Length: 184
View (tube, helix red, strand yellow):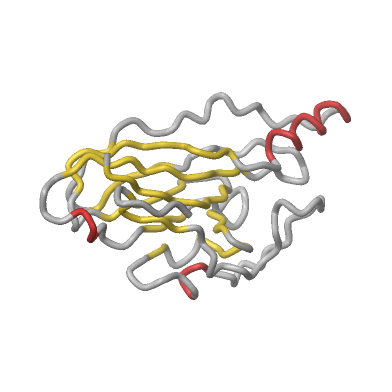
C-alpha cells in the first residue's frame, strides 16, 4: 500500500484470509457464508451484519445473486483534522460471473457518513454483458470477469476527521480491495 504525507487511509484487507479465492481457476466459487468480514476487520471499521465476507486478501459483497446487498465503512478519517478538505477515494473492484453465465447488477456505490459531499460515482457501463452461449462468448466473459479493475476513483469535498467512507451494494456480487484515500 502507498505511504506518503497525502495518504489519509490505505487498506488492503491483509487480515482477511478465509474463504475460497475467486481468482483461482475453478468454475465454482465456494466461499463459506459464515466467513463474515466483521469478525476480523480492524478497529474502527464497521460492516453490515450480512453481505460482506472475507476472501484471501480482499472482501466480497453479496451472498448470491438474490442477496447482493451489504456495506462496509471506514473508520473516521482522523488524519484530516477539522478543516474541510478535498479527498480522492481510489479502490479496486472485481465483478462476479456466475457459473451459469447470468448477468448481475453492478451496484457498488461510495457515500459518506458525516461531513462531506460525494462527487460522481464510478461508471460500470463499459463492462461487457455476461454471455455464455458459445465457447467464444464464455472465454470472453471469463477474460472480462476474472480480473481486477484497478483504480476506480470517487472525489469527496468537505471531508474532515469525522468523515467515514461507506462502500455499499444493492444487488450483485462484487469484490473490493486496495482502498486508498488521498488528500488532494
